[in-house]
Image (cartoon, rainbow, N blue to C red; front, side, top):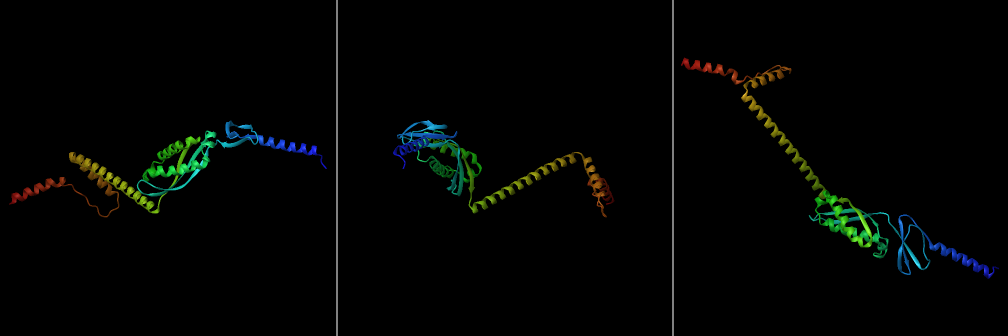
Length: 259
């Protein structure tokens, strides 16, 4: 049988080990400890070795690392009455551990809910074109609004990024038709510009030929050279009217004299 004194010593040893293990806490470099002593907050503890009074103190750990949170897809009706499904990602971290613990019950859940409601509110005021084109401007506006709402909780929102915008199938077909029409319009404009430039060059060439008749003869000789290089059985020689105009005049004069 163990003596009562031995049992008492063992009890005190076990109780002392329990108290010591409950009193010693180790916080990592990115962690801080919010300590409630008899319900009241004392200065933040950590990082490193932290001693708390068992039963009297209650320590709540808060991580100061940046949290990456996916915002679930939200059904949004844009300003031009188009229904889209949008999801996003938000980056935030607590900068004031005491506010993050005392001002809100669960700052992770609260930040997620604020992000969802703000996403629907801000993007609902934008048109579909703004949502597809001005993505950076909308991200900055979302970050500013959400950060303002989470500031009383000691939470800093560093960035908000819209990830995907899912469009209805009929809207995708309409956008494809619009893109095709835009490509056709550009092709027609380019073709028209080419025709206009070509007509300008032809007009300039006609002016030069009309002012210098010798250029017409050079062009005639060049055409003959190009025809001669081809293996054709029949060659048609274009004869300018200027070359036979004198013969025509002499013939007409002879006809008039014979009458």
